[in-house]
Image (cartoon, rainbow, N blue to C red):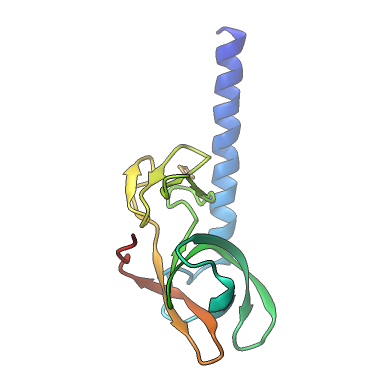
Length: 158
Ligand code: FES
């Protein structure tokens, strides 16, 4: 084996191990998120006015609505369109790496190259499942709240 291909092999192997742990650890601590549980889990992701209109915004920290404390949550993408907000998981459905927003609005996973379109539908494996969407409500104060346990149909985004 040439040193170049050996390096390439080791790099792929390391990427796979990293992705495996990235995928396994969150799954055990995030049971119930994104349609995996029966209990609703609402968190605040901030004010509607703070989300840029027409953009997809990655968010990784939120406030637990019941306790008012900041909590870690699964990484999400919030897409504001006027007075509506749509929220999608940004955890790759293959092994849980965080997908990256591409200039054309699609998403790519840095771990094994899975690709998703603008609404999270798989366009290239190895991921087989689309990125899930969450139920969202905007309360009177303008606070955007997301049910992490929900799993709703993908919206039509422009
Ligand atoms: Fe493997 Fe995303 S974690 S393609």
